Image (tube, one colour):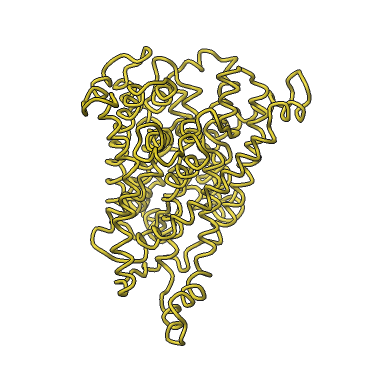
Length: 540
């Protein structure tokens, strides 16, 4: 018996070897390079260097805009959570797809969409919000509303409605019954979603860079500007260190709240029901309004891409420009590079994440918690900080720095935690007795996984692969530091196009964004189709 236990522990450690090495090389090394440059370089002390760079103001604006964006996102996301998780109506899965699309869109695309909406000639230009903090907040809310809908909706679907019905029977009005019976069950999920949204808004790069223009700077954009504009690596390192501290605190809070936001009863069927008369009115009004709000920024992109000349008739000139040279890069070739790089990064993330998920699901106690904490470490540093860390770490290794393999591995590191989060709940649902029976009959661990686990988690693997693909397809932060002229990805090219003035540049950026949106929607529609066939184990 002891030998079998030892063999089992050895197998779990062997499974963890690749993910641990992956995180050690691709995460700890660049972060260590940032710490070394920020704290040990010649010059003024760390605090003096930080304050001299306007660090206190950057921290204040980063935290303030993240908190304001979070509050706005939660307010807009709760009605969408009810529509996608609690009510029942025809075509609900279409709304779920639309609600998922904003979060998996490249941040630079969301930035271009809102800059188009509020900028000169935009549909909402009359509001005067171009390059204002309100434009940044609204873009963040649009990008993150899916997080609230998924996290809160997942819990809301499992809340037993009988408690609210009992309160109504005892004389409570609809509002009081909802507040006293349902809200307490939702509060942990709302807090968890808010913590996740705050994390994403505090590390926002593409949206602030494109929508905020030169008026607003967060720690993320300041790091990029210090490196690219001033080439002040030490100041960038100090700012990145402070950003790491803020993100680690946000991740810790998110992890604590995430545990408290666990679904009321594991495996319980969702409590969807036909709405009451008031609910039917809410559905009839809410569905079209939600669909319009989710599609409106994307429609603005399409409209701008068809108007390369503000005074001319609609044309396809911007799309013809996709095959022309722009600063030494052809947009169509950049799209192909994005698709290839995303496929490579997604495959790496899926392979390493699957190994980690299997080890975590089959471990217990300290080993399971340790493994889970290690593979989640990449969430503790933003993609921009990672990209900058690699820029520092690879200074002494020019051959590695110029290798086309660097970018896919870095993007895989960004996507791996998502793969683990999708697969661990699915693996936990596999009956361990089936594994034991297969092992007794002489099946090897690999064959046990292929014949017992894989048929159960196959859909979850496909979902994880789809999400990993779209996340890496639109990755912008790390790629901004790591791409080379012959390896230009479309999100980075869009950012560079937007930095050039002119209506024709805006139209070309919109056309490039439409391509990325189309690719993203196709993948997400396939993923959502797979999720419809699942029992709801996979988490957002």
